[in-house]
Image (cartoon, rainbow, N blue to C red; front, side):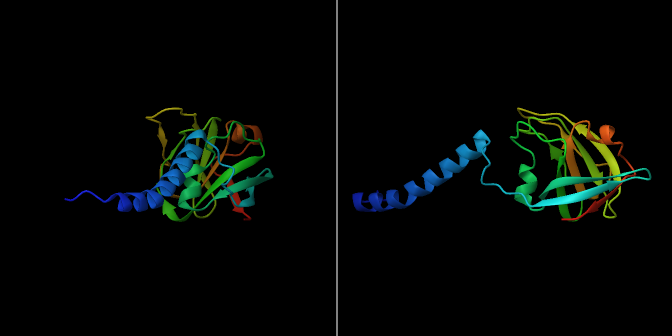
Length: 164
């Protein structure tokens, strides 16, 4: 192979250098947890059981990218906010708490809106992080601040109505 001429090297640098700078900035933003540019769709859900109902504001993670970010990098999460993960079809996907600073609970919800499993999830700062799985396929998952389900009296068997 022949070495590139100085003119060709300059042309390649003019093209490659800006691309490398953009990639580097992207890596820094992700690594430092800055996510101002990420916009989750907003919605509301209603959780009910035979005794009561509660309306909850949610951010909706309905794409692979949004599902991969979830509540990552947030230093706090309001008690009245949830993250609703929506899948196009039933899934057995796992959830982890990498770079998530707030203890959470996750409710796995079937295609009829029934909660069939609630699990507590602890923050994970470095790998390997525990992966949380539902005991069967699910269509939706709802993450909320730890203690939410006990505080409001909801859990397995409660129904979730999605109003997004």
